[in-house]
Image (cartoon, rainbow over all chains, first blue to last red):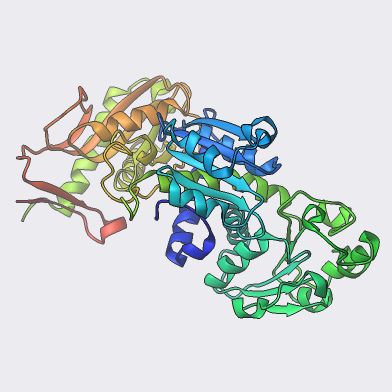
Length: 306
Length: 179
């Protein structure tokens, strides 16, 4: 592995599979009476979150603790960023206290890459703007593989706000690297230009995207990132693009439905679908801990750059 | 390269170890409490074979598990020596509380693997006792660890290496010494 995990773009398919295989072994630790191994004793991991997060931050913290790392989380609401400190200055100050790893989430695309260039600590990207969210794509792949055994050849439909989604970018990169047939679907105003060059098929018809799909992945409408009107109303969005039981019926009978969270019920996904028999949404959350333990473990060793 | 144990000898060695285990754990309650835990990779098939032999002797099914000690190694992240070693699954499908655990490995050398395995086992519960079974003891201990059941004592020099081949993994049963 390289020094940092910045995105799926930097990973080979062998490295992706190594993370998934290692996560298989890590998962068992969470089922023990003592859910902890001594592997990262004495290592310090700082979780630096400049954007709100429940799942990802909790998941990283639990993963770090299960590997016995010393961990602390900095949320922007309580940090000096509010006093006007820049990202680089904040990072250099944390770096001065010699942590071994920094897990960073930031609203700007490329924030993790910037830290990787200036920090000796290993950097894990926990989401940078609209760019990448690699551990989410890895845990999605882990969940898919668990249900479908393999990823190659599967039809995966990704539906929702494509434009603002880092989860989409990381998933497209990962799923195409592993040979899935990826369809992306959303309102024309929320389809990034040039999506086709990533080797995916683009459609504005949910029924076309979902037809015979093995996996349906829903993306949240990211209103906090929207500057402008991309569609008339949330209700109209749901009528055209929302995942309902009637639409799911066009997919394969053993389809699984995924959502990276946070979920807005009745906007991207109907409640009966989110809670229905095809839904693996909570499995994704559970698998996130094992996948992040795998990433932490694999990065803690010697890297190509050392 | 010299063969120090062939397939026939290995079979008889494991049978003898199974008998020794039953001699040391004579009370019916002790037998009922026995459980085998093999250390990955080659301790696992050896543990399974011992379970088979015991079943053949007294009809008792000894529960058998597999332990991966990678995350407990004392050389991880110390002086990085390359990419992280592969972590594989630990599968102990029974409670080890109050069991008499027979910890099984192919070669006993420095004792560091066994130290890691003992730490790992304790995280699964509190066994009544842990006994150590090894196919080959080659000496050169770096920790105060001693096997309870030894297939073969094999005095070696540090320059030599011992290779255990097992049917389940390598397609043949054989122990070789190199160097």
